[in-house]
Image (cartoon, rainbow, N blue to C red; front, side):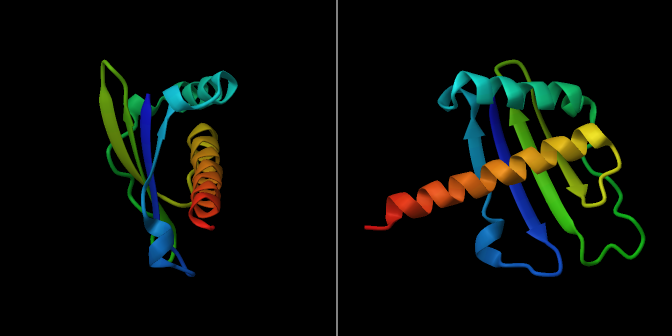
Length: 112
């Protein structure tokens, strides 16, 4: 499973931090891959609408774009913060944490 996650917008927006991060479950330890796959399933990701309407006055909210590709299907959703569904919110929080980990790891690799 390949997941592409992008976060943008919000009150404190830093363009460099909105670069998408791709996570391939094949490259993760088994436990982490299983957890990510579980979160996708529990969130019923492939049944989510492609976009969700932002709440009124949502100019400064974070927006998330999540693309998931498996050998048999692919789906992309765009969400605005204040995600009501707790399973989708858990997925987004998990992906945000993975994004931070990936950026820190990349920074360590790039620092001599």
